[in-house]
Amino acid sequence: MYNSDTPLQAELPSSQKLIKSTILAAISAVVLLFTVVLPAEYGIDPTGVGNLLQLTEMGQVKQQLADEAAADAAGLLVTETPDIDNVAEQAVSATLADTADTAVASGEWRDEIPFTLTPGEGLEIKMKMDSGGKAEYSWVVAGGDLNFDTHGDAAGKAISYEKGRGVAADEGVLEAAFTGNHGWFWRNRGDSDVEVILRTRGDYSTIKTM
Image (cartoon, rainbow, N blue to C red; front, top):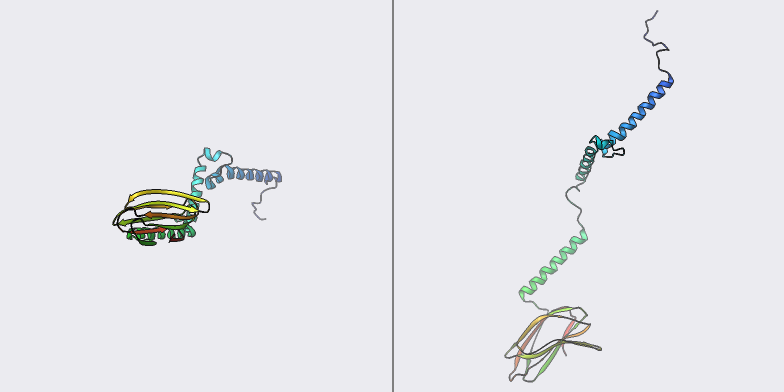
């Protein structure tokens, strides 16, 4: 005879009990999944139990740390990918601004026109400008003063920006009210010749004596 620990048939669980145990185990696993695992590991709390057990916050912290670790590995945690076009545009703008500042500081002008006016003589100089264009100017008289009229004209249009009498110098920015010719007319009402220098720069295509 052989000694055997084989259980008797009556001691074995029935198929019905096995099915019930399996179902209960599955239900328990699902309950744990939604009430513990999801809140604690992923910060997901569909039932609200995780929040009561203070597991949801822990899961959210874990997810945040995981995201930061992934970003750090990709080199994106601290630094952002620069906008190449924007950087280039800013660099060009900065260069142009520096160039303009240097030109102003060193007294550079686009055009410099000297002329002489005898007693009673007048002269008109105008720039061809588009509407809204701006031109910086400076003119100075040596040996006297002048009457002047800063104005503009085009087909069917005319405007006077400023007039003066007995003026020895003037400077400023002339902004074109419309597309056309804009500039100055001077007349020497004194008894002697005067020397004048006109300096200009800005938004105009040509400048000439009319």
